[in-house]
Length: 369
Length: 101
Image (cartoon, rainbow over all chains, first blue to last red; front, side):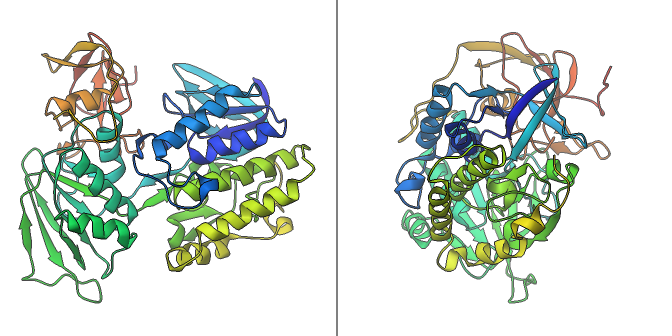
């Protein structure tokens, strides 16, 4: 068994920032990542980020990943295990991992769970045909491996991911037939939507998929319009000749480990599903277990990075490490989160988070790790 | 199906390697995933649903959804969307749930 001070589960934007921040305060960190490389989903984000300079705005996601990974590699008190999956968090505080055929037991004094989220799917007949992919899957195939998902794409969902991936498909030389969105309004930033419209891709709002067709893989799709109550209107069908449907209907937190660890969970639609009750500084209802990023509520990578730093600091405090201006740093991070969640776009997120924030005493009332 | 030119990215592909898919010789690049190499060769059907044997491809491409299980070098239930391609790999469509032992 391996004894460590802090274990960070997940090497995406939240986990990387958490590991760096805790290590800066002197904590010995073990970072475990299931993929062959660090960076999480940043490695396929070719677009420039929003936010402010502090969250690397105007830098491409792929370059932010490089910056963070360089920092991690330069720090002597961060050990990284890649290509290993965390299997479970047990009652006695032991965490098991498996990778490259090796099974290991880890006993950390504190844990930051930064496992991210997985893509949701959409229910319609034949939605399991090959060629119907999550938007993230399409990004991975195109931007990491340089392979086109197909020739003609229907994008489902006009949130930011749907809009950005549409643009990325066009950059890769793939034709996007249309974007459809079930809601009456485009969910993503209008600056993205306008750009795509100018490039000739129609966006149909209040439309959803009626059914997909194809023998072995996707050959055709029928869409239809929704009325104000989200009921489909017969007679409004449009058939589209596409070989790819890219499903971009949101993400849901990968929270299995938190359930297993006994963290109090709550279903919050605005945050993507079940999320842990936590205090303002990211500690869950189990003392010593902290969260950061999409697993704590689905948002953008920018807020995941800030949450990661906050969780890193909190875990360091919990372990007895500090720095003279820790209060100010925490305040600054909380202000950054506030700014990222400001405005009408962040309204649902703010509302959702207000449902799961508990005071420090209440949140950590349960037994420790 | 491979992207040849891209305004932002340049793809650093590994060594060219050969592997077999259901007995057929295919080529890909070392280090890319088996699913990426298959997709580049136009193969989208990776697995079949257990009850109705309906064709399935990947959905998430990052190891979450288990929709891409294939038999690789005799080992069942390999997530080909995350398994790196190596020279000489034997990749086959899996029949049934696959045996553990």
